Image (cartoon, rainbow, N blue to C red):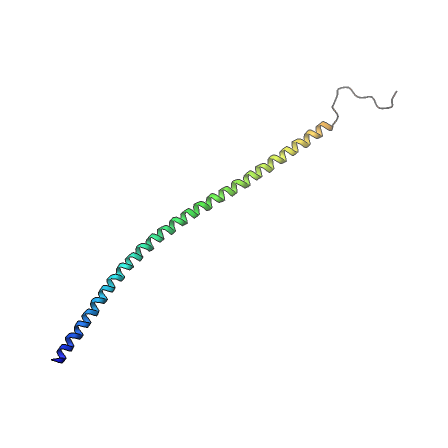
Length: 108
């Protein structure tokens, strides 16, 4: 009889261990499901971040290109203004053309 009681006790212990293992496996499964959900959420957030980063980068590049265009236009306008000023000064220094010739200096 002692052998039968010992076998029943061992069987009960093994059954309890198996129940505990099943409970732990179910808990792990629940945690794995939570981790999977969190991983999907993180992936979606990462993709949204990547899209917004690309949009910000494109916007900054457009601003940079626009800035350089404005600088080029400003420099072109400044150069044109300087050329017009130089032309105006050159025209102001040249003698006016008249229809009658001037007599030479020191003549009669």
